[in-house]
Length: 251
Image (cartoon, rainbow, N blue to C red; front, side, top):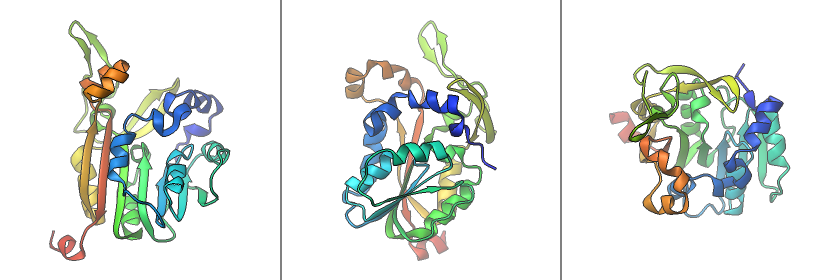
């Protein structure tokens, strides 16, 4: 069974207080970079949202013209909250564990926000996504950056010159148990960047975008509180499309 801290009422209440959950995509600093990886026009497209949470991305895709959106999450509380928002009736919410889930139909776009680091069997999930993507389809995902997730005690350390983010255990991939929102033992999975890229390639996906998100100078003018994010990348964004069969076979 997957770990599902989000159905713990105390954890869910703390999660609901996060800025990005109160503001939606406008509260997600990496959203402009992620949006740039997605198709300009979603009219008539079928979209799969993996780890949909409150459904912000699913509703955005619907508003952008998607023909239908399948939004998947392991948490009943998340799905209940997502359903509480008004939508256009073209979103199907599905309760499922991503370590076992496979799309049941073709998709033009697969998107996932800050979820892949919770998935134990990433290779299986990516293969399932790749097999469902139509020619020219897009896979776009964000996850916790390996430098952010690798340390056994992920935290900033105050130094005379400012903040530092000591990195440990980077080469030792696998399970991490971290404290988050007052909850001990939240399970995530650390993978190196080359592991993510290799998993995409093995699944039959060709990398189109790789962004290690950090605030720009303009971002810092509006959000000076983001300055510590210059010391280490927190979020990794990946974009891919189905590889040509002949190119994949020759690889």
